[in-house]
Image (cartoon, rainbow, N blue to C red; front, side, top):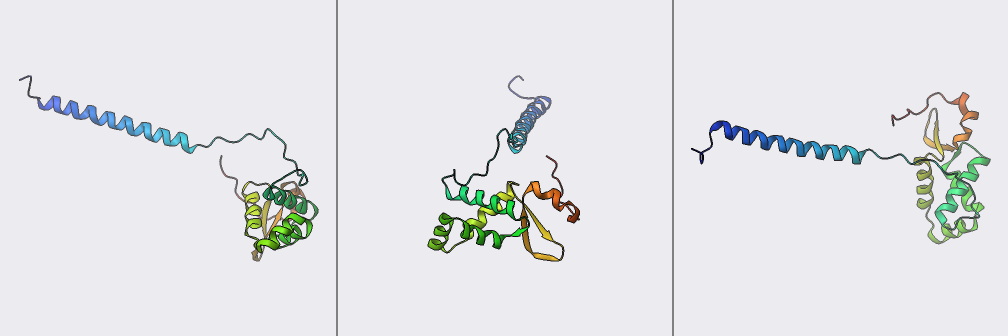
Length: 153
């Protein structure tokens, strides 16, 4: 009788296997939860706007964009690009060689994504997007009627 398993023993064996499978699935989901939670980067350094110190074109473009927005807030993407081309010889050379502004637009929108610059739309004008710096928000506070929702992080 020792060679044959009784129905109770079979149920116990199957129950043990199911418990092990459930534990394995729980571990997998726990790992996924840990991976999905991104650690926040700490802002432990200052960010300086110094286009004369940078070497790469993308950094130079980003620095010049911030300079332009400091001088003139609430400016459109087209005006930013025109001022960039007029202001910096290296950016002007890049534009004359490629005749392409998509790289400049990519840098503008990556700055928006990083929240270095902010975007706004004027009521009734859904076509155009205007940009400004976060420190300029106080001067525009009385004109803002709806702010974006803060994400729960």
